[in-house]
Length: 505
Ligand SMILES: *[C@@H]1O[C@H](CO)[C@@H](O)[C@H](O)[C@H]1NC(C)=O
Ligand SMILES: *[C@@H]1O[C@H](CO)[C@@H](O)[C@H](O)[C@H]1NC(C)=O
Ligand SMILES: *[C@@H]1O[C@H](CO)[C@@H](O)[C@H](O)[C@H]1NC(C)=O
Image (cartoon, rainbow, N blue to C red; front, side):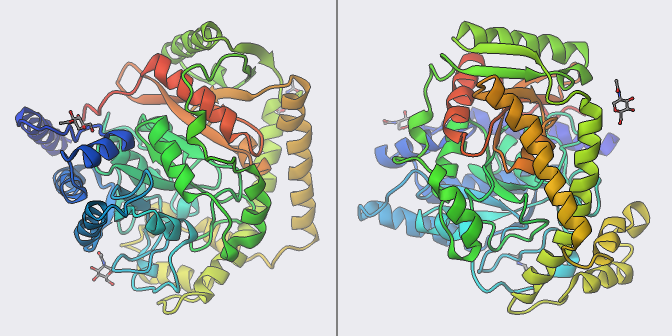
């Protein structure tokens, strides 16, 4: 811990020294809009921007472990983007903007795609993930790969640790968890180690690390963003979404990555009806809370301490002042504990069977891989117990998944039950009270959103006595992104809670 504190002091001094140098473009906290303005008024190049983030990574990553790999092609990509801009062929908000990808998102270049595990090191994918293909077409620069909780919470559950990335740390309070599984994406966005980042969520993996690292995270409607080329957990719940310093930045990223993908045809085809003409930036409205009906379900805020409760109460008052109708004391179920327990057990059972099917399908689709099946992964971990920390974490979920045998009658019944719990729970409550959103702390409602394929947006809400960030979640039904963005943006603009990380011990 002592050496950690020393490192932290060094980092802060370096940051202060950097801030003293005269800069016409302010790199720290630069938004996508500011970056595009800098590009067009000639004070910034993509090359300079990439160099800034590479320096940030070099300086901070030994402490924060947020980045697994830096892209050797990032500077060449930036130079290419700069040339396109000079020739007037640059288009779109993310052109020339450096983005960091969670390490379960496949890319067909020098970067490895390993979900943080040594078992997948050296695997070669057939093509870019669907979202990466869209980013490339938009001219974004891929900066590198963000660390994650290995196998996205299947193993280990320790938040933010992976064999390849090590332990990711919360840049606000180093001894506090950054949460997972998209830990590196959240930490890197918070600490200005990338302009914007992508995370993935199956149940809470964008919402939780966004809350704990004081960034904005969007967990989109299922299928709004392609999951093709993403190391899977379950196609019934997996999503890809942005984790950024502002709502506006996250919306620019969302705009770029949504859409149909022939390699995830059923889900992206079904969700494409939700994509609005003209994209999502039209919903960045300062008066976006006016007239909105926002529900506050019982049982979620109550779990937090008085500091948080007071802050959350203040936020509800702010929403009312800005014209929202806040409906308090709603019940998602007669017995919330029983509902969440039943969701948890059915979700877990379905997830194990779906994970085995989908990870085996992912591995079978690779051009080359050291492992070809879930059984191979389990054997790999057994053969590398020290590197994969088997003693600390074991691999019970992987072993349980391996013992499943496809989607049989038991799994079908569990899927049916989850659909009922969703229809009679969140969906029924929101329709009955004509709600545009419910609000809840951090990732508390992630499973309610996960089982219905519903979207959620985290916005920074405050910091506890130790300085650990917390967030507020606006959750809605499938396709509610436009109104969630309106509310999240209006709330963010009114409260401006986010501060730069303090690197406290
Ligand atoms: C260029 O744009 C940036 C915002 O990105 C701004 O900070 C800077 O002042 C602008 N400079 C000029 C010369 O317009
Ligand atoms: C990808 O992994 C290989 C080891 O298999 C390593 O040599 C290489 O440097 C990695 N690529 C990057 C960009 O880090
Ligand atoms: C709610 O459900 C939990 C878990 O099933 C149970 O322990 C508890 O007694 C129930 N509470 C009420 C008030 O029924």
